[in-house]
Image (cartoon, rainbow, N blue to C red; front, side):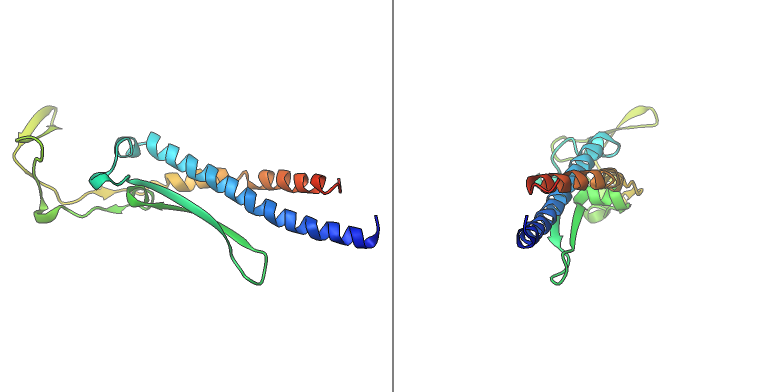
Length: 168
């Protein structure tokens, strides 16, 4: 191989490695998103909240992400996982707003029904001050678990790029 051919091959390898890095980041991000969704749906309080569609037809579980170039001058990339909606409230903890007027009324039935003190209670309305939701970093744990695999995924992608160039 001549020096010119070696230079072109290394230049092409550099682009392949950059592409492999982005592809690897996307793979790991997708694993993190899938893991976070699975974990939210399987653990309390997510099991009851995310088993059905959210209020007003919106799904309460929103976990998305993207990989983007971090700098125009350097070949640096960043990948993000965004947890929003009710899932974000569970992830960070917080407080829900009370309904208008501070009361809940039945919508489809004549009375509200719930369990209290070992018995069933019926009421025409109830006071609802809002809910305090403790922090439960389910998505953070799923992301940490997925991103721990990044070095292996990246090594495999780079090794594949090197083999494809015939340099290994």
